[in-house]
Image 1 (cartoon, one colour):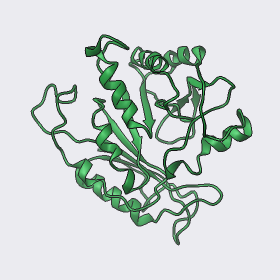
Image 2 (cartoon, helix red, strand yellow):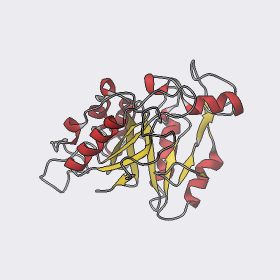
Image 3 (cartoon, one colour):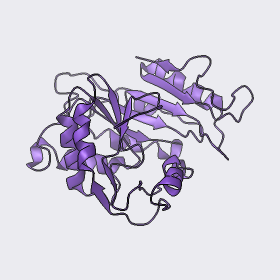
Image 4 (cartoon, rainbow, N blue to C red):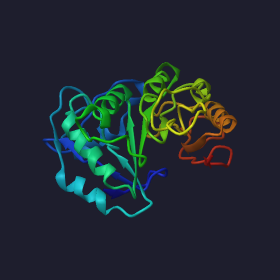
Length: 267
């Protein structure tokens, strides 16, 4: 794991990587178009574009190092790829989840653009299946998905099948106006560990990260789009974190890390 400048976490770790080094992934939606990990991979990694088939390997030393992270820290897993890429075998994912579950003093943040595979893993590799990691979804593993625009908001319906104690959504890069209120209204989720001890409806998401695109030829994010999400979070009592503006509108300089002089809105 490495210390990181990503402001909503403390460390990053990539325990699964291509056999030829560097990093690997495949693009699935417009949010992937200007992928920072692909740019770094072409410069410093295995030189490949993020497309085609991949063969992955589990980095044993990186996996063991997770247990050495300090208590109370947060670790973003697979920031240079996607844990639930279709070319990553279930056995590798299970090994990583077992290691995270055995490190309860650390909060692990798992973000994917493929929530369907995450939900499948939760439903088929948990305690009731007799295979995999043989336990409920650990409370120290947060589950998240990326939603860059309204077209991809239904990913949250799939994320709702993951019984994580904290579910989050990354609206980064934000490429258009977005209404998340339907997923912020408490509803019945079915029987999972979040509802085992309550008769109350539950929220589908607990935390929202919003950010504009950066770098050359960045696509614009209007600050009003971010304000609307912030207001929705405030109304619903959901934590909100603003990562950065795109810098492509008057009054929003590139690299601006606040929204109306505010960065974070905890619950």
